Amino acid sequence: MIDRGLSASMAAAANLSPKNRETVMELVEVWRRHYYRNRLRDKYYAGDVKVKDLGVSVLPEISCKLDPRIDWAAKCVNWWADRVQFEGFNSTDNAIKDELYAIAHQNDMDNLVRKVTMSSLRHSVAFVSVTSGNTELGEPDVVVSGYPATAASALWSDALKRITAALVVVDVEWNRAHNIKTPKLVYVFTDTQFIVLSLVDGRWVADEAEHAMGRVPVEQVAYHGTLEHPFGTSRITPTVMSLVDDAQREIMNMSATAAFASAPQKFFMGADKEQAKKIAETPFGAFIGSIFVGTPNKNKQIPNYGQLPQLTMQPHSDYMRLLASMFSDATNVPLSSLSFTTANPTSADAIIASQEDAIIDINSYILACKRAFTNVATMALSVTHDLNFFEALKAYDITTLFAKPETPSPVSMSDAVTKRVAAFPWMANSDVPLRDLGYKDDELRELQADRKRLAAQNLVREATQSE
Image (cartoon, rainbow, N blue to C red):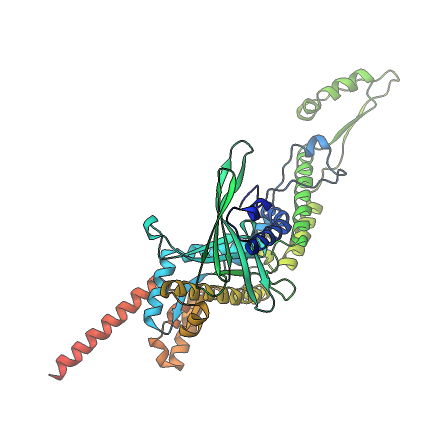
């Protein structure tokens, strides 16, 4: 994320060709159009927005001392991201499968995929680039990097159905004078060129080079991409932001009400002015005092002491539950995940049923992630074997694996796998049941090695017995 972003001066970089100047300028303009809204979503995600007080329920003297926060915006992103679990790449060619495992391991793909998906759910889209690594600097042969929409932009072609140009901020510097981050190293990708923009002595300098990928080596990971919006839509919608504002305001009202409810309002009628003045000067003394002494006023009236009914929190809690229900309806995050539960225990089947809409939506998002990361894997192999992307796409059979978002219990999954293997015995030699049981890539490779070792031992035993 950058605070002081991309500027038109990048398009005026030294050594940049006229055609690429237009591309860079267009990419900068795309970034600028979306930056404010993306930063606003970041603030809601971090719970770093101030309450929008209507000024009708809590006195300014009290509201200025309250700073209510609620993490519903983060919840609607993280609840989805937690169920998008990358399990690795697969191929029918074992040699390619081993290469992909090495690339994924060297680039820490487990963590990278989670970061990319969280960012795409927050901003609507995130970007993944594939470049050759500098082994002299300790980089792997292939570098796979992820970028949020606040540090990247791209141009989309409806005809080609892919990105035709992309810009990513690779490195930033801290400007202590203005307390902001500014970009100092930027990569620009086109179908044929890889452009490095470097900030040298306050001036941008370009270094253009050809690449053989045959397409932009950048892939988008978008949530709910549509024909009108190929880069998707954010989980933090205007509706979500509005409900978060309402919830923050209600938390402030609840805090003020709770404070007043702890000290019920009292009244003293018929007291003379001097007596009333003394009581007004020490309200808490009057509250905690064990004895009240009331004397007749000048009209010989005896003061009357009373107490107003204690304030109740019920209307506030009911309203918070209503807001939570509206938020759950807008985001498909179960109400139980927002700390609102029913009085009766919920069965496992009921929990799964309550998450059905969410699971359908997450499965749709996972399909988009599979397509994106399969293209990323193909690009990585293109770099490794110095191939055109489209040649590699035809040459290699690659799939991307994600865990099932339903996350059923190990007991129910074990039962399902047992029944499946009983119906199809040959599946016992497949890795699919092992993945369904939750074994990750490293564990799978260890189990595969153990299976091969056991098979070899059985062959030796059979050969010895036959002799």
